[in-house]
Image 1: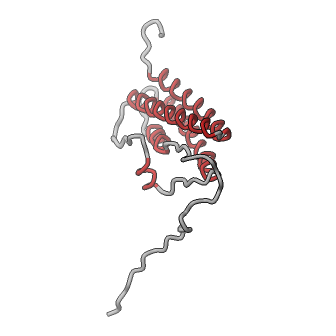
Image 2: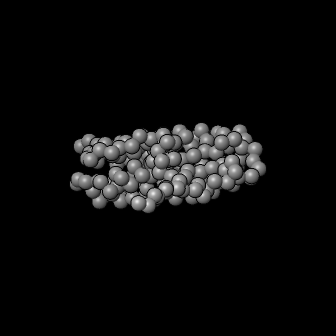
Image 3: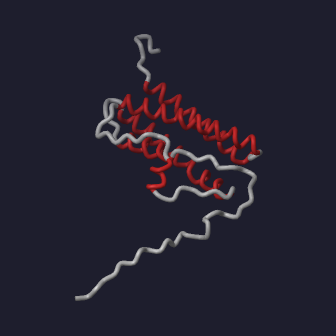
Length: 170
């Protein structure tokens, strides 16, 4: 009878304390809720109803916009000596938005939930911008200004799309 032993896999990513030696006078870097991208895509995939096409395309566009923030943000964090997310588990431990795992969500509820999540993101972006201004990090503040404008546009579109018109069209 052969005896087998199992080795624990080596952590190939381990490098000392893991910190980059980039010099910076900034404190912790702003992070973005990756969960918003995943939730937006989830709702995009599970949209249904009479406005399916419009809502499906809207959420696809918004998810693409949110995803496009990821790489510049991660690169900025690394330039400043910070660490970025490493795994799905890391995302779940640090996310600030609630998941929605329901099998069915009314389209109007999807739009309202994403609107509120984008409002939460806008608040976080404003707070991060304030930190950048206090510390003189013009480059990060500049990126955040664009992302904040995009987030406010998403909030506006989600609000208008989810609004019930009265008989006058308002």
